[in-house]
Image (cartoon, rainbow, N blue to C red; front, top):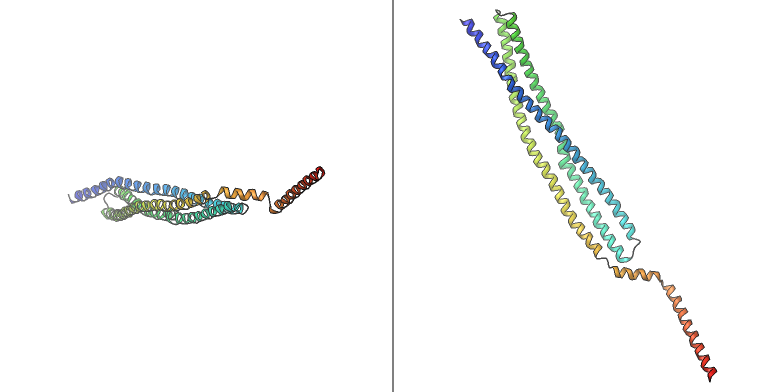
Length: 272
């Protein structure tokens, strides 16, 4: 009778262990999917944001070229236009300083945090590997116990040893599974917190830059608007008739008038 009770007890343990596996497998699969999903999308986000930063840096470089060209052109122009263009270029140069700050902040507050998730994912995969190893060990011990029962149904010592090994493996797997569950729970909380922080930093950096850009571009616009067209036009017209040319023209006109007066005097003398 005691033998039957003993046998029933361990058959029940075996059945319960089998029943526990599907939920564990589902849990492990869900954790794997969670980690893989973060790995995929955080990797994509990191690459796209890094490209965004590189393009912003290239835009800054092109704007620097524009500033140099506007300065070079201004040096060839009339006074008011020259002053307005140089002030415009200075404002544009100031804007590129803000753009440089934008690039550096995006790199530090958006790209780097996303990039750091590579090492976080690696650790989570190692935790998963440990859990799967423990569960495989448990499954192996369970199969070993079943095999022992089939080969040596009457050898209670060997069966008891196999049952002890299975119990130890089951306890280890359960402990490691609990640790993994706690770890993945913390991972999920950290992920949500980091997403909020990273995207918030992106928006903040962009808002600061665009606020400064609006201020600087407004000033640049006013510098262009304030250029005195009429005064520069007079300067241009004057440049077409330099002083030495005007002096020669005055001499010719004076000589012409003198000659005309002399001729008139001679005509009058003949008449009288």
